[in-house]
Length: 228
Figure (cartoon, rainbow, N blue to C red):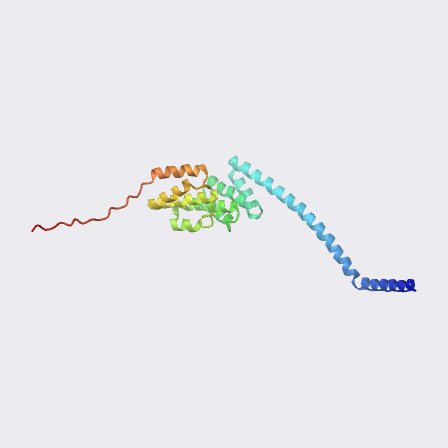
């Protein structure tokens, strides 16, 4: 009897499976195809991305060769294309595009515009470097307050880029005649562990050059007694 019951249960299960397949078989088939297609697409995209990155790197290296040879117009065109494509190389390409604008065409405004666009949020090292360069190119026309506002994303990070930003601020204080602030900033940078050796040397030279601010003597009044 148990065998009969088992056979009946097996037939019932088969009927249930057949019914489920009639209802949902097409969906299962579609889902399987979708999974296979997604895997194939990811693999294809990975291959295409690797090829694109290789092509961008080849174009970037060719642009650097043109820049080194003094072919600024061709270098600008190649670098501009890389910048506009917004790839991983774009922030780095922007650095050299600004160099080509400045050296090749003498266009400081174009170089500043490229660097400011590349600076974006200032999250990566290349973006922070672009920010620092843009402020350096504008430093002669900026007030100390404007410079501090522009460099705010770098200040306090205790990195070499931050040290260079702080050096710009110290130089800005000196340019405005705030010798006390300038000496204080350069003296701090001279002992900063994150400051590169060249900056430390420049800070030492600056401290030997910047005049010391002498405290004004307090006014005194001579109290003399009238003779009797």
